[in-house]
Length: 488
Ligand code: ADP
Image (cartoon, rainbow, N blue to C red):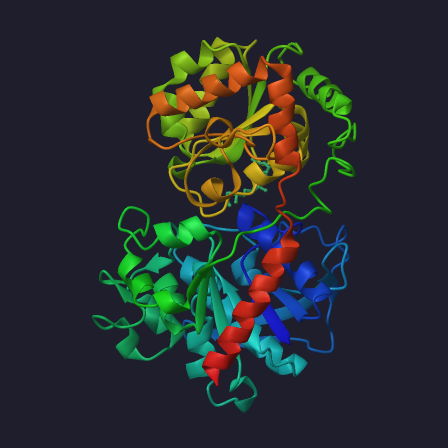
């Protein structure tokens, strides 16, 4: 089976969030199952070509891809996905992808990803490689089925290519003004009222992906149910309901080449569930890098996140005084909205012994926090899957989460599931979207931390949780088979 995975991010080359982790990990596990998989992403100027051995494919040379009425020059580069034999293809279009960052708010943001979608098709033609499935991800790739079936419908090589469209976050839909249609040169009917790309009088790439793909998926079972409701569906719930029989949840896994406390190259002391002594040494090492004093008896609560509303920072802001009066230390790594950046910077300066914030994206620090912190907080309003709680479980760093989406599917509250006989109860969770509920969960976690035997049991339950990719990769193969069958 031949599968093209198309996305706007792929770890370790280009990453802003969980999508990159999925695109950088799933293909390795698919390859182990015998799938012939290739990854297609843009070649951003931020990608370190030397480090990852990117190679220009001169045989293919310049490709002209038409966007917004003009031919744009595209070149192709390739590299292996680290720790695998999987080929990654980088679409090099200087005019669109050399902007210093992955996403922009520029006037031509729509064109950048129209180009990605069309270029992938042109490249498959040049490679004479017709995928059985195009596995598209998030709004940036929602137009792929339109281009393949319509603009390039003349090319018989794609007659049997099917589409799986994966939604990693329904909050980002690729909405543009209706003028975007002209830039795609697709049929006018799609943007007329009720058309496949028309949504609330605008152009929606995600709606298109949902309606024109054979199968649709999202990244956890709970989120797959949640997005069918007005509370979580961000307006697309009815569109998804119309495709409910082809819509599935597949939980992400974690890439143990990258996230494993026994082998992690980015942490100083390795450890396993058989001996947690080195976890304490990591805590000491981590705290030495900050303004906080190491004290074995005081729990360190870590946060690594995009600082946006979705992640529940308003709940932290609401309860900030009571949270900071708890006997705990806080380590925050993130960047995003100014109000949240200011909140944490202020916490830093008012309570330098309790709080340490690093604004920015820093993968090494993210690994150190996972290894050195005692607890990890994710109070998300919604969370399609969430990866950090799974990394935390694996690193014996007990997660405190809001019970939603993938957080609900992976974290079992100690007091709800507690059992010394069974290996359940691996974290703490709360339901209400209030600062008070968040505070109560953090307080319960601190109380358990102060009972060492109980804490160790919770840590070990987490470390024994199976969040590997193997089972999920098999589920994806079944979805690919389903999509192929539907396309016939
Ligand atoms: P989302 O995709 O919504 O941002 P996920 O939990 O699915 O959330 O994935 C986030 C990924 O990005 C994780 O691998 C996390 O460690 C990483 N990450 C987020 N913010 C930062 C940061 N400031 N520095 C380093 N890594 C980060």
